[in-house]
Structures are given as C-alpha cells and as structure tokens.
Image (tube, rainbow, N blue to C red; front, side, top):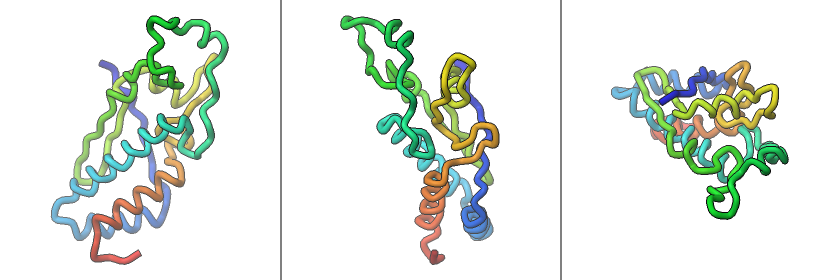
Length: 156
C-alpha cells in the first residue's frame, strides 16, 4: 500500500503563536495534535463533498477522455471527481507525536491530484500550494479554532 506524503507547513503567525502557548502548557501535547489531525480530515472530507480545493476553487471537471473511459451503467461507481469508487476517501489517516501531525492518503494516485501531471490538471486536496506545502487560509483558521477549543482557558 503506497502512502502519499507531503510536508505541510502552517505559516500563520497567529496559529504558530497559539500552538506554542498550548504546547508549553499542555501535559499531553498529542491531544491537540490529534485534534488538529481530525480537523484536517474533516476539511479534506468536505473537499470531496464540495469538489473544491483548499482555496474554495472548484475542481476542474473530467476531461472527455476520462468520461469516455469510465464504466457504463453496470458499474458507475460514485461518479465523483477524484474518487470514482471511494478508495481515496476510505484510506485517509493521521498519526501524531508531541510536535507534529502526519496526515496521509494511502493511495499513490492522491499525489497526481495534489500536484497535477503533464496530462492532468491539479485538483488540490491537502494544500493551497503543493510546491510550498502551505495550507489554505480556511484550513489554518480551522486549526486555530481547534487549538482555541482545546485551550479553553486562553482567550482569542
């Protein structure tokens, strides 16, 4: 089983500052990292529902050659862009340690969607910019909300 691995960097100074505060005070820093992983997973799941990238831009429709290659009525699959049979969505996971979250898609072809190819337009799943590994602003905001929700005693 192949795993798509992309380094994602949170660049929001506010997110990094609040996360640093949390990690200094936390007895169990893996708790917040796990919550951040769950938040990323929700964001990715929502992308498959809305068929949009991390910046809210709709994924490009299938090329006609893709439509022509899809199974006929006897096996239509889900018919969703990027996840015709649901395999990409079924094989998501994350692991944590005290300072990081590793989020991944187990199917190798997730990388083709994330980065695009010479024959296929990019349809972002995890990053706003795959070259820098930067998260979209909405994902960074959701991570910040997750941190605040877990801090409880600090105010925004």
